[in-house]
Length: 460
Image 1 (spheres, rainbow, N blue to C red):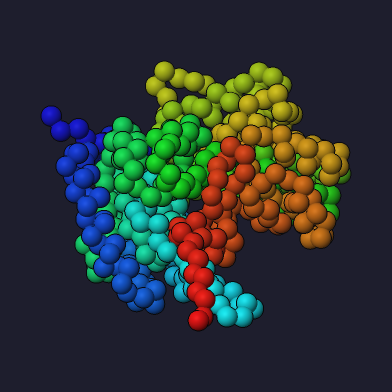
Image 2 (image 1 turned 90 degrees about the vertical axis):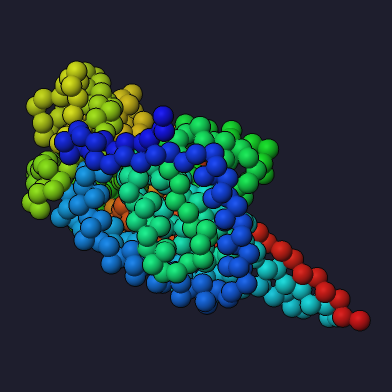
């Protein structure tokens, strides 16, 4: 019997789509096609590649009306947000536009009698293992620059969002990319790890859990494949006494609850200076009341279900533990772990929290946020760093010099001031500690998808 992968929709709990898992022969053929296509692709210029990839972006954006309800059915995001079109276009176009400069040879003048430069060459076969929470955005971070740099790409998408991989493949075909240069494979965990361990993959980009990252590292051990790993997060925000309060409240509510809190760089804990704590909490709770839960296919719904019931149960468990230890819930009166758990979970705001509670130190990845009073900047920085993760941190202050100084002390990959939950493609996307290693986007993203090669030529 052929093994299949099923998408169980969080909307109604029914199977939304089902696909067969690739066979061993399918995987071997995909690797072979990738190698052949890469040779032809390497013979065309970066500028010519850009034409293909821009056509790909056009084709993908042209499918947006179909993609938006598919996302709602697959992972629960409300249709009112229009999918991921804006971010996909911004990141893709930017990386295409900078490719020629980022990949250009770096000349090293100044040594008479010699010509010297460092070139950047493709790594080979790049495997992208994409997550379900932002299934298009996270994938284009690597797919577009990998192809622009001359690599081939094999995409293994999350089982919850299998149709996204198909949409990528359709858009690539429409754009006329060489057959085999980009391939979408439906794989189980064992076959994914076996392909990585085969030595036929030169770079793996994985976005997912810390444990998933460890499994990728174990599978790649001894192959010398390079890795880009974006793993867990527990992103903090610090609201200083001089913050623009209304601006901070509005944006931090959005940063906490958008996508049902299922954002890699979503805000999961907030520290507020004692001088403005009460006013901030009152404003935050009042604003959060407008983030109502409902069916994601309803245009009026603001918050949809989480992708799977077990994800919602983890958040329920953290919330219950915090309440038992003295936290106060401001939005909901009922927090149960039922036998028949549901992915539908309304946002929650907790105060009277501390770092003995899991909700303030362990990843939640759901619509709950703890707000904690701090006496000063030093206490805020200490608490922000009291986490095994480090993806982003935001500081809310009208003094940007002080915000930058504080940011230098925070253990994180990105420091924001007066904004959160956003990726600027001109800046490298990276993390520290258990959040992972490597970096995507910006010219550094190209460095991580290529191999440097030195030329040292003596004139005789």
